[in-house]
Image (cartoon, rainbow, N blue to C red):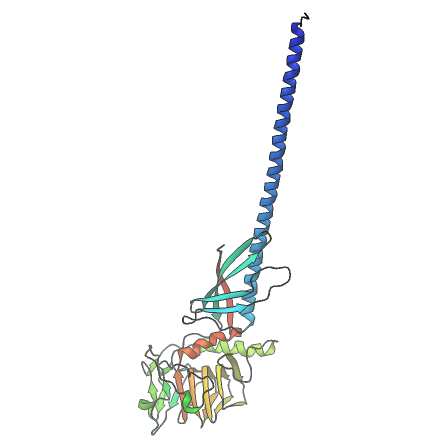
Length: 365
């Protein structure tokens, strides 16, 4: 029988241990390699997802800027409390991905919100909710159906029969038909709180039948002049005439597209149609009313600028006079000046006279 020495058994045992250890080391290395590959793959996925989510956010932000640019350069029927949503469509430039149909929602007067979703690869998507505010560049808050901020105010009211008011500070709705004619343009004042019929900064001279032809709550009142505010607005509008994009035109706007109309010194606008927006009758200019005329908005008479005529007219909104030491409004004809909050609210749709400001935003998805 062959005898195996102890030293040989020890050597064989050592070789066996080396093999086991080697296998264990190889197994550990394999596990570490797999873990490294998995970690690297996961990191790549995380990085890719982060990149795509970031891209989706930037796309959404680009879409928000696109909507704001659209609102600043296009005529938009902004939502109201009664019609709380308006849908607008914007274009998406090549290389960007965001939704092109946006619901603009009413929040409060001149404050609106909308949501914009941008997308990236791997189904990445981000939605930004943005609140905007329209900041009007024209004077706000009428003081009366007629507000005479200059010196020496005087009004000559209708005399004789006819009934009704020549100046009334009660709130009148605009006619149902913006293209109404004659008596079909007449509306009935609502029960809403009324303004003064005649607002002046010094005691006015009144002649004619003011009892029958002056209405409001109160019918007349004295207050603080806003002449500087209105004059600055007129100067801003007139100064734009020397630019490539003047803020005014020589014809009347419409209810759907209200506009600023300027009647300069030495010219007369013969008003025989309907219109909406703002009329500035500058010093030396005249608004002559012939036939039937219905206007919705704000009329500003500066200096010797005047309104006259023998036609039948309703002016819904407010009439303001500035820049005079004496001023006579002659209402002996069939011209009625009715305060109308609806007519003045429509001025917000003169996009050139509003600044769109982003007031707040948040990521909602």
